[in-house]
Length: 621
Image (cartoon, rainbow, N blue to C red; front, side, top):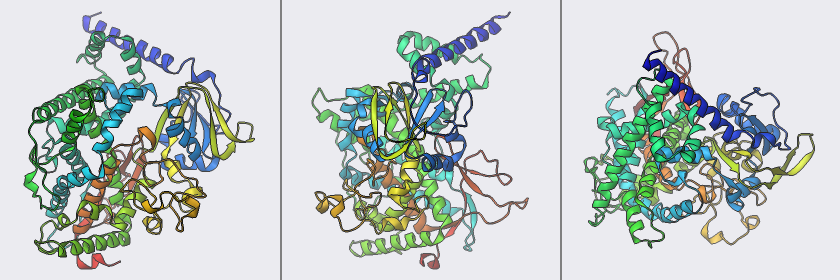
């Protein structure tokens, strides 16, 4: 046997042994010997169970499970029995009241640590509390106001690129808008969060932004290896971990899966190198104050140079230096926040943006209504300001301040309804670290069919939090909970939570039952414990999405820019073979849009839409 064959055999054998050990250590002898007394679907694969159907059978399957069995049911998996949870009271206990009994699974935490470092999604306990304490004020409304001028030129550039491709005669042209939305989101997080001078809309990706763009797809490709990571990180020294990584990423291992592992290592190293370079520059400039342009100063597209405006890293580093020594984060933790914030804000925002644009293309009356609202708001704001009028300005959205943009009623309704119905992360996992009994708001059935109002959970059991099912709970959201109806938000009291609440400030001390107008997502005082509009899209408690205000601002700015300048519809023209492109959204890690066969391959992400420049009749609804 030659040396290369021997190396391949030993390496592959070692990986196989590690895989078996990791699976046994993670799942064996723990949750498999426990049983939860809940009803649930009986059909399941003998080994992998039926949890996988959540990702194979699409959105409807995930929602119908809760509609059929209620807010708590039993699924089976390779891990053993899993509780599929969407009951509001149970979720309140899991993510707020008894959150220390329910932690992110070790697989989640350790893989995030290996990829991103010591950021918020990689830490637990006291370390996570300290990080959260520092970062909460960083994402304040006042800081969002200062960051909007960085996003405005990016949104304008996006619409300019699309407009430049359109015929002069006002006819439609089909354009796949997904890559442009993805690059806009990437430029937004790079420039506004990191202060990194990316310009992917114009020049494409450099090595760093290309690594950021590829990280999520590679994570999805390597799910098989995730159980191995915690065992390796907890049982090997850093020296032996490096040796093991060098071994499994050796170029002479021929399999495609190992090629993916090598590519993942390359991407992580590029991301780490780029983040460290940007971080070093930020630290060096910390002593030199940067003057932020006021929000009423009109920024130009070519002003996007490093250091011209503040960004989240500037704000975070200044907050850290002003903290007491015991509360300060280490450089490694600050670097981890950089990586996490970009990762968390890229694919989730792209997914939500593309879904929102698709829904507006599907609903032209809603698109016209939104366009009319935006134009009216700009005209009103421009009359109160000096400078060019609406019709004279190249980028009229610059007239809208942060508060004006965020408080546009129908724009807000469109964004909220899209985030409710199609949360970018449809499911989240938790592991029971301490045996407990979980109360239920609404009774469900036990394994024997008896009605029960609580469930006993053993240590090491796994929970799948169904954000999808919670956001579509008919009892709280109405019989039309599965329909996209932005109008529902216009008649709801407490529609805004820009200042941190879904209930108006002057009603904060009034019991829910005493408020005169209905509050969306609340019935008889019952609601979900989400941080955003009584929905679970951004979770709640100490592990809620800390950047949801930034995500909301970025979505609204880009959608407003697209709708104001462009009119768009779903594809209607047959291709050369007579087939019309039909977009389907597949539910995997994220909602992924593809074009169904025969017009498409059903795999490659794409959102092809028919675009033309806006005409006056496009404002009529």
